[in-house]
Image 1 (cartoon, helix red, strand yellow):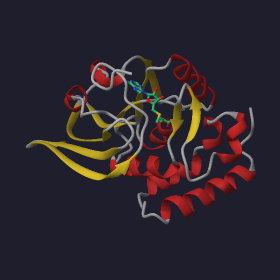
Image 2: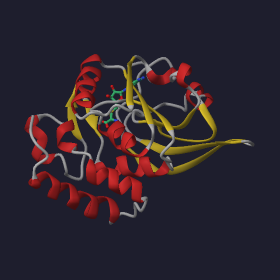
Image 3: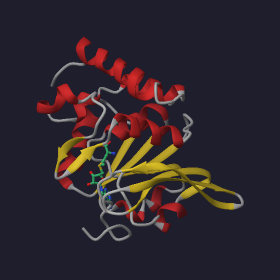
Length: 218
Ligand code: SAM
């Protein structure tokens, strides 16, 4: 395993400054987490030198690790507190879960592709993320036994908002999810309060498909 060398620390610092802060992300907890998590560990060795670029990268199984800015934007939209419990649907490389785990108290993350699930699990063990728990299954029905969650993040594009997930949001909870077509979506923020559920559009995005019972059928 590679170390978090000075070269990568420098690239990470530049990523936060030029891609994240420059574009208006101001939540100090999000900026600190992005400065800390070694993103290059979450991609294959061949792609390590591109890990801090302003783009998504392939992680195998036709899936991707999201562009750093979208990770920061979605995390900021969740308005996390340090005692929050967060559900993520779509573990992928594990990078977004690691960012969440630096800010919130516990992260529950679900992945439907076994090889990605296994790789991320090993990485969380190696990097000692003891506050991340994982499940290998279809995440479109959420994680009922551990609900309600203070925040829910879906990192794959859904044809519509899965009601199961909204129902697992605590009162006062926040959720972000890309919703739309197979190739491009709108990022939607959902807030649940004592009066009901409110939705807001944050802008356009491009995610791989959310595949499952309440998502796309492959
Ligand atoms: N959060 C990830 C990261 O930091 O690398 C990005 C993941 S990638 C854009 C989307 C992931 O969602 C893929 O790994 C895909 O297998 C997973 N996925 C798609 N549908 C899913 C479902 N129904 N349940 C769980 N995971 C799902």
